[in-house]
Length: 145
Image 1 (tube, rainbow, N blue to C red):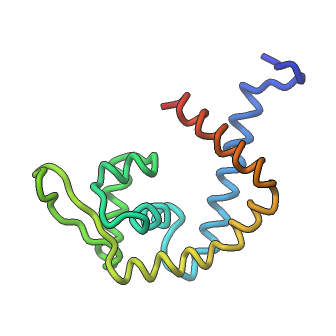
Image 2: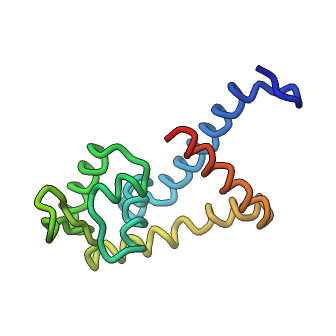
């Protein structure tokens, strides 16, 4: 149904969000080609880089990813010695994940290689617009959760 501006936000907004996500994902994949990690793996490395460790379930929540997908990516990252998965000290069902030294280096290199993308995004919005967009995307996320 059209809103007060004549836009059908039920159709336009989801497609606009999808287009922005896909473009960001493609640009990130291209920037990370030389690093040897995918955009989705970079998201996991970033989630771990900002914590000493996390459980796999924490990573699922932080990255809004499917548990099976996170597990599969962690197995790949562990085989490449970028993360280490260990039994949780107090919960036998859980696994604790940490970055290895190689994982920290890969994350740092990936961060550097994606700087231009972050710069492009920052340059497209004022600080106020970026803050407002972040708040609005959080509301969309909450509505869909």
